[in-house]
Length: 142
Image (cartoon, rainbow, N blue to C red):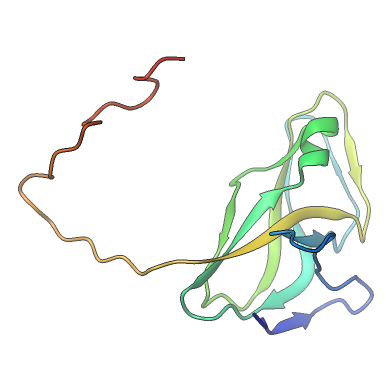
């Protein structure tokens, strides 16, 4: 699938897959930042995209940053709607115990483009039954 992409910062790499078959494309930091423990910041990526109707972008954390440094995406996954045309930005948080420096051009998150169906909610008096019922929030055990 071809997705129109506008580079707002021509010196940054174009988002791409690290390996053939990868679902996520790497997003890069447009600026240098230091994330203190517990701090969150919105980091621009230097790109804007035009997703086709029926598709959404999910911004996910990079597993290596999460494991080694406790860096996550606050609203992970972040959601990019098909009508959004602004710069992609990632809200990062430092769950670690040490300050973490992100340098311009560093990979900070991944974008996964997924299809979706539009929903139309219809109010009813009662929901149809299921074997699960209202069980949730740990109802099946630990």
